[in-house]
Image 1 (cartoon, helix red, strand yellow):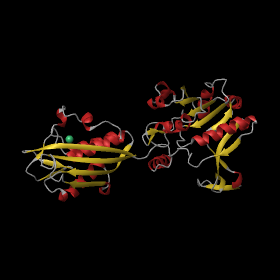
Image 2: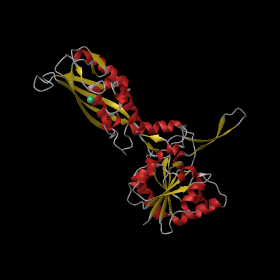
Image 3: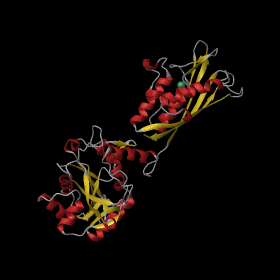
Image 4: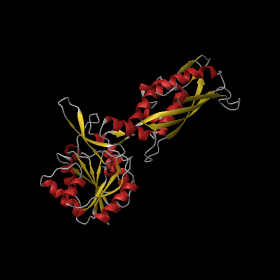
Length: 393
Ligand code: MG
């Protein structure tokens, strides 16, 4: 059986806010369109994907579409969703048995739901996932000229279902429906057109998680779901490790964790040689798989001569933010024989929590000595180890 999915991403809707269409807005570092593609890309029964984009985006498709493993064709959409889906159907090969149509604005569909729709569509010719209405449904219209709606009927809730996508159809059933649409029948989903052709449309159990992002509240809910890992689609916590050491040298200030410490020697280095900040920087970059401190702030670059490392840390937070990530917590081991660093820890925590934009409770710094054993133990160097977690923002 050959199965094609058409992803309807042709709208320019900005009701969710922002200056790009909602399907290209980012949730947890990926666009809604990328989230929407995943359950199909992962499902081995899907042979190919047709993505219908607004004409201006169809010329230069979003780079993320290149990471999809299933063959993808990009099609320029029309003025309405119905026109866009029709343009997608024109691209479907005549050997295809089942065509699914899915909204790009539904980021949390599962491969199980995709399977259920394919099975039901193959068996019956037309199947739609739907959830039962849980609230009592009222029909109302404005009356009395005061702008208020007045109820005219209470619908029997047991027979009310809220339709979702992907909607699945055998190719000829969908083509007949599209033909009806081209003759002037308007509908808000493909199932309604199919109903109009007289073909029975069957329901499969939908999924409350498969909600559609329409308003800014929906977008906030989608952010929240990804952050809390409700979708199960991607790992929500990323961990990184960092290490740094510097020689002690006379005539330099000693800066650790963004705090100047009174001591007879400082740490040698191109920047301020703040080993705590450098270890934390590498832990954060590591958690994002975004390289290391030397790549982002090379010591051959005069811009970083005597640079304040706590300020570099603010830049690193911006670098990972561009990848859709934010710091969760940081744990540091600081190893120095002298001076006694415990009294400086609260000030370091304060500096790091400000630079990383997290609560002080998310920062831990433990200071230790090397028990006189090695170069650190002889006071010739200091070192820091750090781990950091990152979360989708
Ligand atoms: Mg360093």
